[in-house]
Image (cartoon, rainbow, N blue to C red):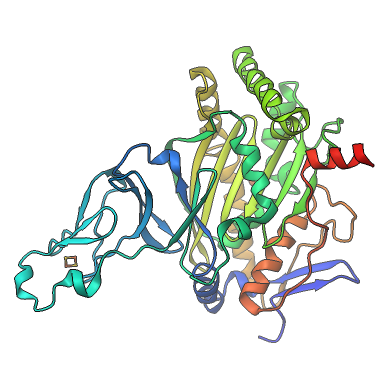
Length: 438
Ligand code: FES
Ligand SMILES: [Fe+2]
């Protein structure tokens, strides 16, 4: 290929991506090898494993893993493949088990990984436990209850990798003084489009008015202000919101007007109480950042956090092929919510973000259409992601957050480092202090 994958022209404020990256098998293989073998990948939240010996199996970075607590209560991740001849040692999505026994020939492993039983083990001159030890465990680290794994020993630690983007996780966790928890139920669906299209879409404020106009109209009929169309500035964030980046490809769009569509008084009151507690614990400015601003965030490469007052969603986006993508999504909520507020959030998760909700099918349709459009990539080779480039402060419906992700993608895939667009993000309460001191 002669054209570069990513064109980042600062003089013209032009940012383009070659459509080949959405269709090529070669790029897909490179991504598997370079991105998913070497980045911190979200595995799960500690609240999914409340007790000792609890486990969940899931696919992370294209590998089957067991996310579990061992008999001491320590969180682990084990690769779900038998050391004998490769079969899964655990075939259940979740449960509570001290021992995982491979169903093929019966090799058995403690839930901390050690191989503890081999049927007819006397037939081996060297005991398999001596040869193989136990199930492989990748590196794991957590930030405030969010667990990530990394298949590379060379990667920096998780905190270094997250950098200041950890602020976005703080804003989610601090919605309750007891933290957050994953709610029961997982949305799992596939789409016939390249995974990077959904990454873009997850932090795309530009498409909201056109693709989700049904939702916008519904809000207006209910007398509410749709996101990014209000007139109030919150914590220095204008109504149109801001797009910002955090280094390493992590980025977010932040906007005021974090409303509670269709909420009754009890739900509104219960949220107001959480807000009061957050003010008492963290001060006005931070509480306002938590509750009065909404955020759609991407943590490179494939972990999304959508954080609104009416519900919070975590999403992982995994390529299955150049034009096929697996999405897994969970709902998180402040711990200790009353039943009515919980139900309100669950309803929103189903009716808005669910695979049959108000938002997701429309998004999927847009992405699958784009993928079909890429059949003309020879004639029409470039996609444009320039919106808001060159602005001092891009808005939420600009495309800075996508460019930030793409620059990291480009760095990992090609080795070429493209400089960031805006200065490092300063948390809102720190800005306030700076301004007060100035
Ligand atoms: S493959 Fe697991 S015991 Fe043979
Ligand atoms: Fe959307």
